[in-house]
Length: 194
Image 1: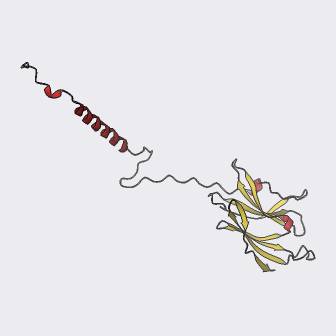
Image 2: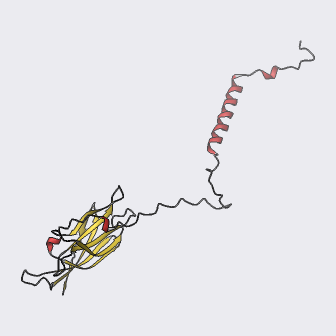
Image 3: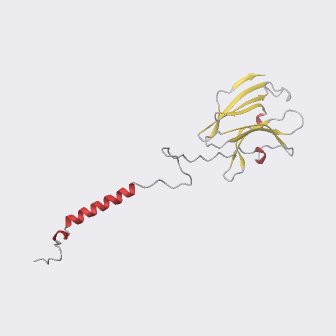
């Protein structure tokens, strides 16, 4: 017979089904707490009802300065001079390259140009990564542009060795585009009369 001052605690005996229900309920609470995390803390507050702003993309590096790059132009002791330059993102990495037309500073005559692509190396220094026109071709560059990931140049040249170097008699429009890790010259180079 139960003691009159002490209540009957028969209903407090834990059975295995009680432990199972308690464990299931606790697992559900822990899982719900894991799914319902608060937003990440930021230093600024967002306006109510508006989604958080995306982080701004890293700004592209400035175009490399050709004055700091070593051009593969052999001037035999003379200085070289950059006569034209153009910049643009040629390989799609969001960082611009610089394309230059350079020649030896001969003082007279029509020294041939070289056309070079300069990019910023991993260490931050400009370096020549491609020669589009070798000075050995004996061309002069009349116009140089970069646009739509394409380098375009108007090249002046000679139809024969008998043509005086002062007066090129051929004019050609050439284009190069970055493809498969290298610059490929367009097959449709346009010959123009001078």
